[in-house]
Length: 298
Image (cartoon, rainbow, N blue to C red; front, side, top):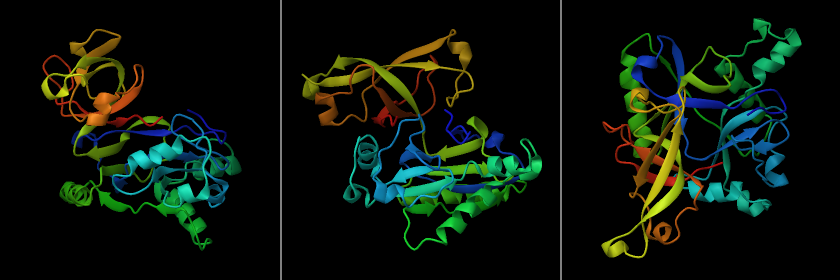
């Protein structure tokens, strides 16, 4: 999805140790919020939907592009998701919303335009892009932006993997979701990037609800499980053995775990998209231990 300033949204791939290159990475906490992409004029979700944040919040953003997460604290995802879908908002609603920024995407583009498009002298490293945000924040007494702290890890040394595990455990202890690993010496990469990684204690993905099963026993009269459909494409963020599935690869499976009593009484509508977590795959190519996580943030 492209924006007015000429960049597409970066999408992270699932971490795999063998995909790590022997170079310098910047490692940061992965915040469980709603993706917010600011193009200098308009705030949008990663799918391009406009987020109607109030003017009192928007006016604190810079005239250049940002990428990050709208966040309202640990376990605050549902609250910030509800705000992001409103067609109008007031200042009081957004007082607790922080913009956890992890990039300034157009830094390299702006430099390239100054030096001639495609001129590599205009390249901005990730650290340089973050420094641009830091300089902006130094000019403001009040801000809605939190620049996400970064830890530099050089993976030419195997000891960095031990440090990575330590950082992950520290994030999980405080209720966090995981880590983001990004190569410093690289421009903002549009689309799914194989070496821009997210490391979590579990894998997650999205599927479409196409039906329900009836509950039994205590759940009689309620939804027992959601029947889901998912089309899997090669190159997507879904580690899958395509020998188990004909093309186009469409799988069907049930999700009965993770549903609250309220959701069982009023399940997600047919056709809606949900996010679920899982732990690997069965011999039949279906997600193992699939568990409802939340409604998908569009």
